[in-house]
Length: 206
Image (cartoon, rainbow, N blue to C red; front, side, top):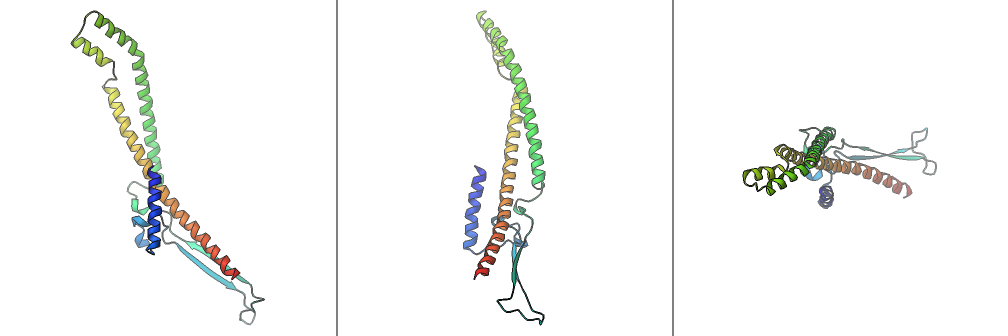
């Protein structure tokens, strides 16, 4: 599928970024296509608090209490490379829902028209058979034959449904790609936070 293909492409791209030692996405690179899966301005700060005595000097190691902390700063997970001319995810999802409702109504209308046409079909077939048995041919027969198929209104409706379907699929794919990249940015934040805590644990045991 399109989503899996995008995920695979970005996994390969991220590996390439690490190989080239290019995995930080600063503000100037927020629109860089190959860095969209990385959170913007992601920084990890580590600091240590040591206990001092009343004389202002560090306590002996055996009496000293040390606390280590970390905190993460980053920009909001946003897919800048795809732009916001038509809004962000919320706007796109509202448009998708609107397209879905319009498509549903069009399909329901077509089903009603199709059922009505199928209801009339036996009578049309009977008239066709009667006309043929009476030796009718030419224009009259052609007119009856055309009547067996959906009329121009139904054809126009089918064309409209086709356009709505393509529009719906396009918007759904756009939303999926944005969500994948935003989630990837969020995961890069979580992984960085976990890595910093593991680092603190490792240093604390050394």
